[in-house]
Amino acid sequence: MLHPERLKAWLDQLEDLPLPVPLEQRDDIRRALNDSRRSIREIADLLQDAPTLAFAILREANRAQSARDNPAESLEVALNRLGLSRASQLLDSLPAVPEAQMPRALNQLLLISRHAMQQASGLFANRLARLWQEIHWGSLFTLAPLWALATARPELMESWQRQVYGLGRCSSEVEEELLGTRLLPLCRALADSWRLPDWVGQGYALLSDDKRLLVRALHVAHTEHEPLGQQQRLDADPELQRWLTRPANTILLANSIAMAAHQSWGGVHMLRWQRLTSLYLQIPLEELQQIVHGLAAQSARRHARPLLWHPAEALLWPWDARRWLNGPKAEEPAKAPDTLAEWRQHCTRLMQAPSPFGNAVQLLDCATAALQACGLQRGMILLADKGGNWLQARRHFGLDGEIGDFKLEVAASPVLRKLLQQPGQLRLSPANMAEFSALIPGALKALIPSEHLLLRSLGNGARVVMLVLSDRHGQPLADLHAQAFGRTVQCIEHAVKQMARGA
Image (cartoon, rainbow, N blue to C red; front, side, top):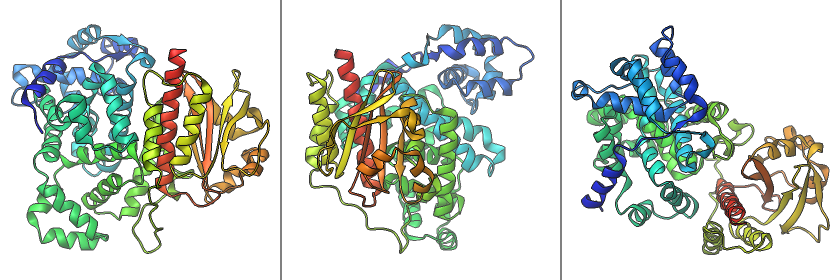
């Protein structure tokens, strides 16, 4: 439902909102803008690491009367029109904040946008070399309306993410409750007001108003799995073929893949957008998935930040062992556990702010109950000492007998050392067990003998404080189980931080 008055109120609040610039990059960018030896291309490349400033430059350039009928479609064009002197003045006018102190919701969205830019460049820029700048920068700026919302009201974006991704609620219902309007019309209105690249507005218009061609394309992608059959269907529908091959679709596909990966690599949304992208590129789904996974890994190496979630963390090691195909060998999809309602109740309690837990014992009890309710049958929660040298078991379930004073020395295991350096996840399977088995403590393997195991370290501030591990009594883990585990530990990590703030 569209509420014009509420939509206008949000527009008034967000249209001219200055977005923060990372303090760590401000001085380097200022020097570059004032260095006559630097080319526009070099400066634009530097600004990739400060997306909020890049957006501010594009927005300012497109506000000029001269740009009304011909808005800049890339940052290089915007820099040429605005001039380096004015760009430097704009930099000085924006709030400079240490990246770690910027709203977490904003940093998370910026990470998704960088991931989308990596996907767009890798999937489409070489094939459409003449349009690489439009693809590159358009994919980065597509979510700019959400950057503004996350700057103004980070708690709303975090609540949206928790309820939609974490608790599986309908996004339209959550948006109505939190914002009083839908997100897509708001994003489209802001994109129009800021005169973002036309392709951005076309993507929002397609998702909000005109899904007819999108649905037809998805039907072809879903029913025809081979490129030859897809091409024959498109040849029989010239209107659909003309629409599908529009370059503007590239940035919508890239952002949709990045957003879907943020939720779940194996979810229905990801498979839908992967199929559509394979149809656009006319390559098999399996090949497209390998490319997408590889680009996600590249993005993680370049863009990952401590305490932020990058979807590449959820890929199996090695990543190319993970596939989601509908061939005859595909496994039966896992069913949601009967305790789903109970799991949601536990997660809701873990996500409450301020913390409802009076002490660590209550928090650990709730965390253990949530892990059991999400369909996992065996697990353990270990706490790190202040020096990060030892992990002490504090809660367990599904294990045979008592475990006593079970402790693990971190220095003795390369896997534990890596997980204790910063929050991260490892998913063990027969495909990578040979690689990691020797690196895992023998005491842990003896206690939980399994070739299908999930390990996740959780942080509070700059320090890892907890290790959670779980499995299904050695049985293979479906993507649903891995996804439920990931959502549960995110809730546990949130509860740890909330409790630390109130201490």
